[in-house]
Length: 124
Image (cartoon, rainbow, N blue to C red):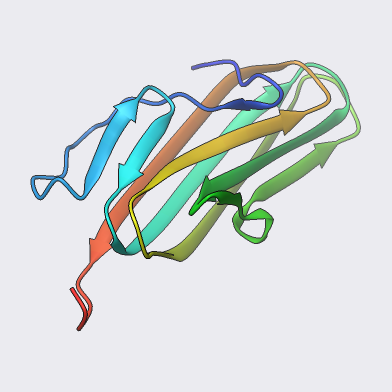
């Protein structure tokens, strides 16, 4: 379990590595993606210490993608929030991928699972 901090990227550890080298974890909060097309799915859960919201936003290709984000809000303290998102990411040039947390409450017992799969396309 981890704490998610406001305006900070979420840290993670790899369970498997990509033998092709197209998907490489370059820090505890970043994955570097080679040019290509990827299927990305992630799931977030946490407990908010106070009434508030949790917003998780993926960023790559030099911008944030709110449309692929996860948002949950609670009206009481010590209540769980969760959500998941899946999308196709087209990466025209090497890029850094992150998931960033925004919240107005302290967060505890956070968990994140993410899978990134490289897709074979006719251009690959």
